[in-house]
Image: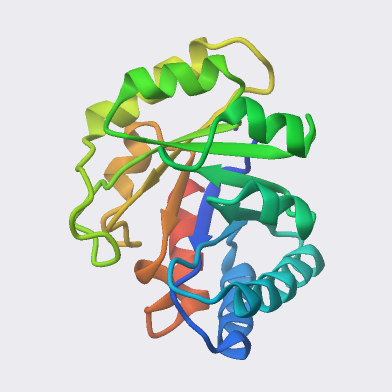
Length: 216
């Protein structure tokens, strides 16, 4: 029996740096058809006007598809487009501030890198998921710190031991593909976040289905 989580388990897509919004929307639709449960809009190199135009369309599509929609870094933008939540890194402001702005019903996820102590702090502050990584060498973030399967295991123990039900989820990210994700899931990840491993694959729907099958 699967645990009831505050953030959906399974495949968590993260958008690549594509300016072509039509291409991105088609890719998101294909991933959703394959079983993707959540999507994070993550753009690091885009002008604000272009970002807003794209994020609005992606938010609308995710709503139509029934895919949980998360905005990376920026809780103000998440609030503006009524996203389902925000993902916060170390430099993105405090969780309490984001919670106050977004309200109790929104999802807040936190990057915990390779630091279970950071995960414990995030859980105590009410995070809905804690994310560890990079699990494997990442083409998107080649200089990212590396997390281990033990960090995922420790995160799962912390999540299961923390107060609040349903419990917070454990997310793994960084270099994950349908081919290397099984050990990460076995270690305790409720969700696997893929960028290149999903959106650069030759058949996005089939890749999403392979990822979904790992949880089934």
